[in-house]
Figure 1 (cartoon, rainbow, N blue to C red):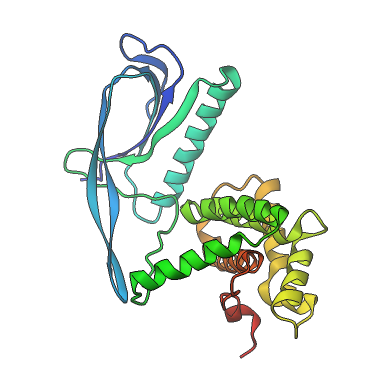
Figure 2: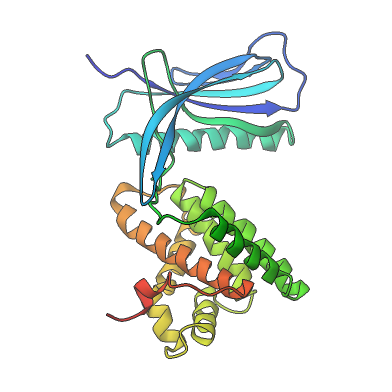
Length: 296
């Protein structure tokens, strides 16, 4: 007996008078778009993190949700029974179909689609499905005293007051993109968000980002290394080329065969962005990049 199909659901609040009952916009054997008034009830599987210094683990739990009567756009995709190896590809295709459909709404009826209320797989009775956009990170951290953490954060926030108005504005903008990178699950999204940090600081529109960033790190942190040496060891040139490939080739997801190399580039990029932000904020730069920059 084969595996049952998996339901992928996207729900948006609509700036539109709610229909009296469900209204079908489009329907095929595996794809459906509806306008509907609600209420909408569904369940989905979520990760539950367990943190016990200095270890961390993850289990799964089911979350139930009910949306009240309102005006909604609902997109439902049926994913055929699949083995675990093909699941990421199927989920990626489903997400692209949702993006395509919502874009048509945006182009034809600008402003109709409001905030996204849910996107992802949903559970059926007796079926629990968890298919995230990308790998989830479970980080084990050393035990820290909450009062020490509070003191250090308070000191760092106070140091921001010493920045010039221009640097503070630049830090805030870069911090917004860095935070989006931390919150995103899709590794391509994370990559582009972290790259935007370097575009804002230290590049500031002055030449190639890989060159300006390498020079910044040479002048402010690794003074014994030239710009060219830092660029080579961090692989910022390769990362910049990958960024161009993502944008110019329309790359929305990482292919399974490219995952290992892509995630290494993403790690280098995240560490670079974090280091540059610390320097801009007047904090100690940390040792994030030592893993790649310092020779054995």
